[in-house]
Image 1 (cartoon, helix red, strand yellow):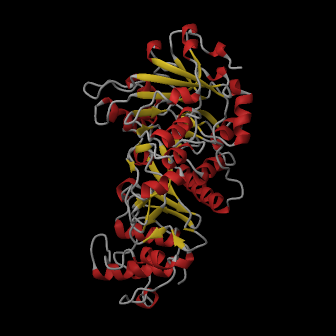
Image 2: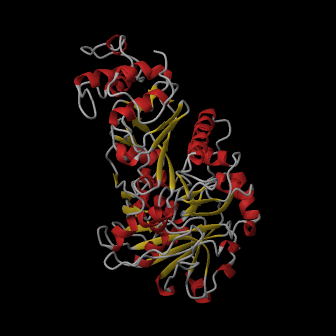
Image 3: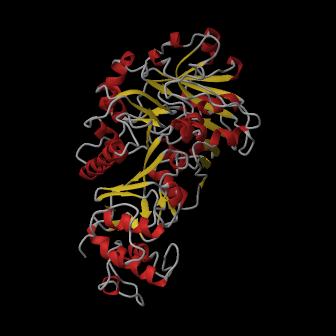
Length: 533
């Protein structure tokens, strides 16, 4: 039996219905805004029912969310042909394939921008909002669950609202949310956040009860996040970065509290944060999008005083631990809308240290975080640019190679630019760390080649750079060779194979040269010695 005591506005109990009945309210061509951010707090019933409905009546919608959905929902919707347009982020492998086949339109945009684009009329009006909730207040207010994302703007703008009350989430979650809707851009007031713990909004999402068209009960946890245990590369990256922080502290640029931290979703970023629990750090804070296992590990170890984000994306073990003792954490965390967590104004004011994951980096520090070989979307830019462009320090982490060593994450030129070299301060791989601050393009290339490249690709990449320097230019490139590694990958499945004719052998071309031969000498920062060829 459903727990109707979660509905404090008793007249709304008449609107309880099945997921299928609620999905029938969604017509062809409608624009739907659904809760969900990094697979947490997402619709677990109505969107799934919509996928089944679309297989019968070919309903197609525009679907907006906060970020990625869990439960395989995006894949089910894409397979059923239920989505004509998707934005601003997705991470489902099935939907990704259909997008890359050109059968589904996808707008990949900065996560800070969607709410403003809706408010300003750049995107079509929202017909229906589907929001996961723990409860409904007597005035119709919605108590969110494990994410806020774009839920508040969806509820504010939608003609009708469908609420999924998830009984797997305790009602006691109320109070960890800070719901704030900015004004229109003209004459917008300052966002009064000067400390990560400051509240500026309400604990629930305001909603006129007359717009609540359906209430569906569910009982299902969020999809669990993957853990970082046993990932040697991630642990090595964390070690390099923690050593770098120690150097910054010794230089007087940071304290033992560092600055408010942001970390993108994923194993590597989570491992870096987890490593802080082992170091001599204290009174840490976080101003980020996603609170992961490492966030709660730092809170439990007494290392982190407070964490602000837009969602909680946790492993099964951490999820159970947090919700079994929610009172332990409720005064140390806040969940906010993503246009607040990702607001440039606040990120700059707080002086955030941003740690995000790169898909590939080039030798000059440009970063691709979204596309394979320049064409095929993986997930999207997400909120990484919001933080990279506005942070005190922008750090990108990645393994130096992937797919058994057949792909180098460091390349001569990235095939898609999400973050230009101007927004990248530090690049870290398991091989080492390159501090790019205060360097010109050639110096950046030397730092990356010396510290971040896998030995299997050192000859290729240093050879390319040296030959490019001989041709000249402020940012030396050989356009006829810049994507040779990617061409090799397309042709053979590996970047290692040299199959293209007409190009000088990269090893032979620089056999009599080394990075130290380049002029002017690399003098901005001391670096580790060149690796042997």
